Length: 226
Image 1 (cartoon, rainbow, N blue to C red):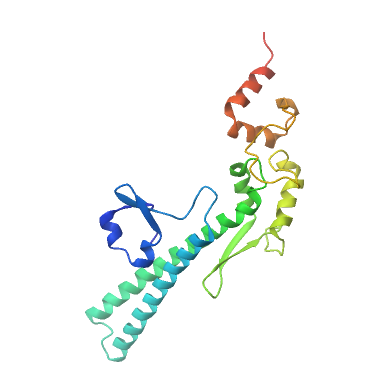
Image 2: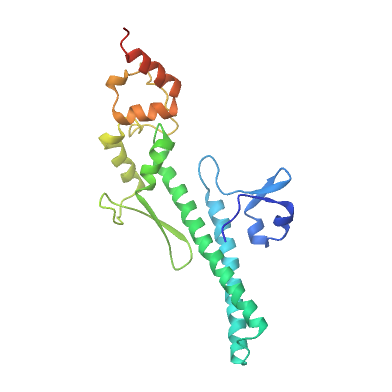
């Protein structure tokens, strides 16, 4: 069962304590507090893991009860059927928790590269395409970097960042190797702005998304008058 982004007070009160911890007060109701402007923090991921562990324990307890009923010859009793439904519901919740954990881990990991971009939202889909998250035996989400061949590699995030910085396709989107994050699409330090004809395709796409008015002005300036 996936978490709803917004719930009312009545729905909130029906949640278990571990799930309540994932919500914060928002007006008359509550909202999921997982992702901020800079992506989920480790504390957010820990909350998800805590909720998952709580539901895993609940499923194990229900499975033990069902096993005891079967041993007593009551495997088809009303109580046993209720336990079977409960186990199925908890299994679905655990699956949803795993997906949420993997998503949050990917979001957090991608920030290591997008922080080195002038246009984080533009570069993010490309970075996410190079990441893969799996759940390990301890129930934690583990992120690995995929190589250019799409297979898991031993690359570090510094190496992945350097690859994006050197890739001509992303010229103009990434900050230089010596720069820090937060460029926000600002013009060069000398104040000069390239003409559209001097920009790469990726630079034109980035400017059109981050500064549509400026892009329109450059487009009009580049259009010959009759």
